[in-house]
Length: 289
Image (cartoon, rainbow, N blue to C red; front, side, top):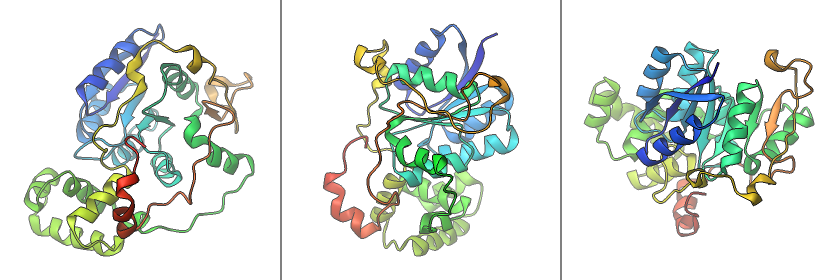
């Protein structure tokens, strides 16, 4: 029996390409699609897929919020998150929301296939670009909590409003999406801007970009390349850590699967900059990075 997949991705071209590649695999079939976070939740409830392949920068309701709701309502469904962002903080938010894997959107075809199969085998998949620091944390048994950031102090409602405002919605428009009053949106908007130290919509949008709530124009993906490349085929390998999963007992492959055992480490502290810092370095933010 094939594994049933729901694809949640805003962009038609990428969504159709993913459908074609996944349907070509002998052990997977795409049973549904969604263009935003709300529809992703509705489709997951209705279709009950085995796995949701979900873009974390979905419109209306973010992929992180959608992941959290899907896992709370249907914990048996596995979620493989896709993102163009690789900061430690953003990866941690995705994993804390319940994501079973984290796939960079510039990954190769081979990595997509490996991620799908690893997650369905009960392992946590991490793309090599994000694996270094997080794998070290697991291997060293270091479970110390990191210092709380202003972003982590935002409520789920404040994050939803931040995303909608950054996407260009007015208070009234955001209120219609969320089925609340414009005054409620205005109140939460003022609260989140105070917590993040923001002064205007431009700074709010920069934070939304940095935190992965919205994507930078021009983000592209090698997933659309289709056939695997010889160079990419050499990037395989895995690091498995943790207790055996029920689907993999006795196989010797448990816990976390990483696309490359020597995954590149992310630089910096893993947090996002303050709005003034973001504004100062906006001209050097790489496209899709």
